[in-house]
Image (cartoon, rainbow, N blue to C red):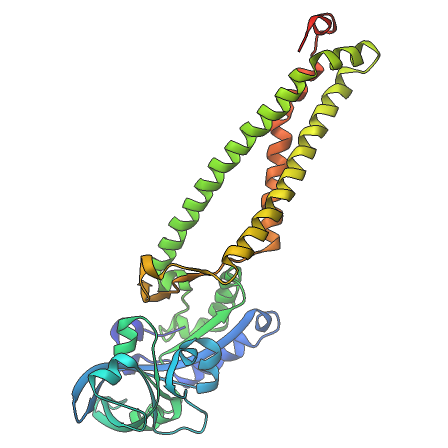
Length: 360
């Protein structure tokens, strides 16, 4: 949730306190609150940070320390010192890149200058309380976290913010929560004082990359399912041909063609179910044994691989979702049922007289 600050980067295009309050109230509504993991209101401004060693442009993000710790992982990327605390006033949490550029250490002082709410240049003295390493060079070299109250006093913005970020339990909740926010903020949105944006719209490059990756996965799964289908057809059909004479004898003794086909169909489904269960079990055990702690890809992708501003962990940790496994097994069973139809029809249409002449 933001106003037009995302495009203009001007402090006057911030979200006013009443809009922020309505948004937070809407997110606390019954049926919506259960989907919300964290909410963080930020005041972001472009500033100039300076020390005795020089000056550097930075992005100052004024946050509520408690809410931000639940919202992002920047507090977990601590290298030295500590993250911001609720009682902090003149504290700054900076990246290793900025600390190196301005020769800052824990306890060092720096001055940040930015345009305030009255369009005047205002300066604020800060003291470094923590240093982090995010992995994204742009973040490590430019992001500075300070308490929201400090920014309000420094810039004259009081409790106003530039954006409100929301983390949800599941991506499927983005659409209904966004719709609820748009309804609750209909008046501010109509005046152009607010805008609701989902993560796909906010980061289209990342959304496109995920879509391409998903398409690749579906393509691989499709090829595997085709191979599975041919394997089942081949195995069950060979089983039918191998017992061609036996099926003829059974039909001569009174077994109907329908029951003959049913036997083959059940055999195909049983083969599919057992092999699928055994395959998933062996695959899970092998994955857990060899890659339970993750597969380190740092040698191939580097320690700090990023995409569209998002850090990609070089250690790939496998995830096991029962719902997804159940869906795949159900789909494989469906493939097994379809693939067993042709062998079942062949068995049901056996010519009894011809089958008696058949020899293995």
